[in-house]
Length: 217
Image (cartoon, rainbow, N blue to C red; front, side, top):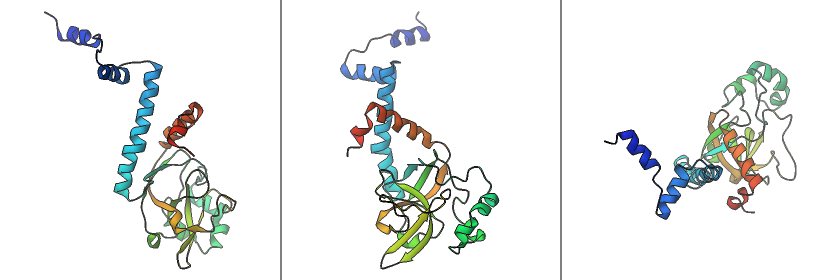
């Protein structure tokens, strides 16, 4: 009598016959490098075109999740009191006190490689100290803190990275003039380090050229 293990072994060695069986075996059972590459691509497609849009519908924004790709919001391992002493002159000039900043979301900043979850937010409801994601002429969205908000017939926001000495003003980004239509969402939750999965993966597919299949100019 053939025991269960022998049956499983015999089944494992059974060669797939149909095209779909061959594809299924290649994806789930083949341990080749090409199988791993295909699995990575399939995971990317699934997340990019199914999971990501689904979360967007739930959270009310086309950018429900972003990976932090710069260190502009890092506090460089300092506790809040030390960080504030280093930066207080800048914020006090804007009438933002230490007590104000302590009430802000992500008051200790966040790091490159973190994942940030966003919700859609009406411009009226965005407050000083909120961390927002907005689009500029740069190829990636910017995630910085609101330090000023003005009503000029429409809301105009000013932002700054906690780790930046001053606001950015160049041909691609003017943080003193962020229009409400540029805002993609407000950050509400941080997951440390998980964003490196995306950063490394994007770097990999850029090297292979696959990136440009999904991100044409």
